[in-house]
Amino acid sequence: MKKPYVALFIAVVSVSFAAIFIVSCQAPPLSIAFYRLSFTTLFLLPFVLFHKKIRYEMLNLSSSTTLIMFGIGIILASHFALWITSLTKTSVASSVILVTAHPVMVAPLSHFLFKEKISYLSIVGITLSIAGVIILVGGNYGLQPGTLYGNVLAILGGIAAGIYILGGRRMRQKISTICYAFIVYGVAAIVLFLLCLLFNSPLLISHRDYEIIFLMALVSGIFGHTFYNWALKYVPAYVASVALLAEPVGSSLLAFLLPWIQQVPSIYTITGGSIVLAGIYLTVRTANFQNF
Image 1 (cartoon, rainbow, N blue to C red):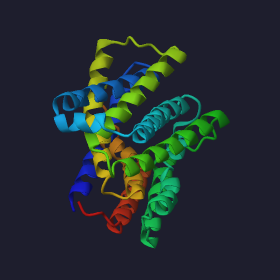
Image 2: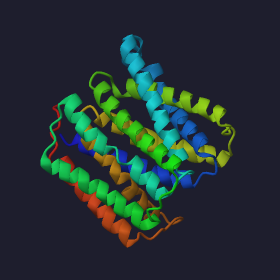
Image 3: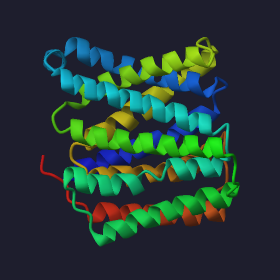
């Protein structure tokens, strides 16, 4: 029963590195997102080519299941495109707060769609976690109103993230992690490639950026999103959603610990981060995990 906890912990720590990798890149956001998903898909390719069971599973997927996973891939690409673009159209605080509000949507939908029981203590934990993110981000950057366009993009990015989590929770009940991740990541990479062409985002970037994004794909893609997708089979959707709120906390801690960054956390980071972690603890502690 500890495996889902361990997988979620590894996933959150791994995705927390994404912000560190991104700020180290010079490439445009859409280019970064495209190569991140492309490299992550390529990491999974050997498992598909040389694992007979996975190949058999992929070749025998029903058309309806395949279409649903294609849709989830499009949603994942939309999340990256909407959120990253929102960062250029509104304040960092507004974008991060709005895009990480998906537990508000995921919790009730997981209850009605999947019959996942949510205790009052879990509701308190979800509320605490979101409040902690608001304190952490808002206190550090200031809650600037930004522009309506950027805020709408961030909200849509958060909705896309919520749908991605709910879709993964449903599909992972019957599809293996590698099969699911390979198809979803691959579709997302293709969609982001088309978006790069549409918005003239360069496909040729520096060697240094290729190296950084390669590491991002390995750390944040494989050990982050893929471990997260594995855990979705066993962890209620709202728990998985709330767990991701620890990402800004992890990024802040890494920015402090890594010697080439060394950003000393402010009182808002410490206070908000502590509240987020307390909220996640309450939510996870009261959740009911399935047997596996």
